[in-house]
Image 1 (tube, rainbow, N blue to C red):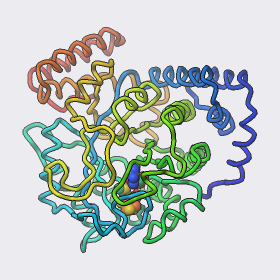
Image 2 (image 1 turned 180 degrees about the vertical axis):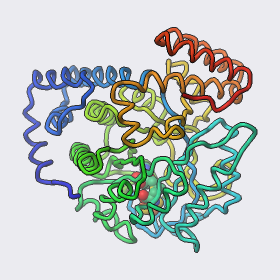
Image 3 (image 1 turned 60 degrees about the horizontal axis):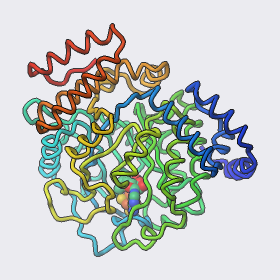
Image 4 (image 1 turned 120 degrees about the vertical axis):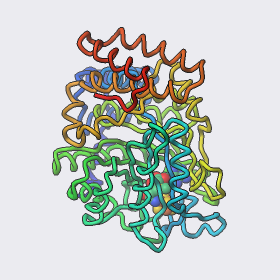
Length: 456
Ligand code: SAM
Ligand code: SF4
């Protein structure tokens, strides 16, 4: 595929003149949960008026609640290596950063890190690596996926390993699929080609088109779920969002399914990177909230992921606007969970532990979900989208969120959180449709009696 640069520029220009009434009509239509068009998205992105912005936020909140309820899925990144042959101007792992302490975890170390995450209560891991996989090539990553899945701690284990590594060829994607990964994540960083080329000056990542077409190859190779993203701060955010919509449309047109998730990282300070200290197109907190809300409105059924790059308050604000997955208790250096010495990729905005994050979520009415049910029942790719579309997420995913959170409360929480958590679960049960309620209560009893890994 190619990004239609001219169309984006023209659409953004035309959108400057959208009247408030037009924006309100778009927002009204958006409440049907069917998304909005490319041109309409541009009109929403152009809004600066405070009152209209609030109306955008309200609409995003409505859509988020209708589709996802009060559920937020949790995961942790697991950095296996900070070795990298690329030269990305914003990243501490870039090849020219000689001062960085490098480390590629051994498989035993991958297992030790995994155990640490399991003991915190995690069930989902995002495996991350720079683009250089020791002497073993890609097999190093495959082995790491196997290592993560191999670790058991009593009844607990990691049930879904998502992967964020460099783009692969179709044949390599076919091999990766054999290792039972969840989502393959890859961020385009910037869709604006001249900017991309000026910021990626060495290594395989220089090739913009190879990266842009990676998700097409992944789906071609039979992977079910792909996750896309933009690194905000590199180029004009409005351009990036429209380009991302073109990317999504091309995937939908070609494969009948769009991305499973969208990530919205903003640049954080990274060791030795001047650009990361002063991003050329820094996105303000207000614009960042608008981006999340507009994405929620434009592609209502695609998960939106927010990482610990953002601080606790920004994260709280963003939950309401459309975020459906968050990381917690993260470390961005290989070996970080075991306090091993190695350079981190960037500094974090949210340093709280998983326990602190879950506690805070419950206090704000959100239920932490560790659910991986869909993948294990084969509800992935297009099937997942079909399930999601009529709003069934609420019927399947809310009870599953309650089950996995109840398991977490029994196995990992302190008394205070356990009490608060079960109070929230009780409240949510009373809102369930009658036929789901009975089944849910039954399963919760099984969990109280010691059963684990309960889902439907
Ligand atoms: N090396 C692979 C790649 O570049 O696609 C995958 C892993 S890379 C560690 C994951 C992501 O981290 C990148 O896609 C980039 O968006 C993000 N990243 C790099 N430097 C960052 C920074 N200073 N602040 C925030 N995110 C950053
Ligand atoms: Fe390497 Fe990825 Fe960092 Fe670029 S963003 S330097 S490819 S780890």
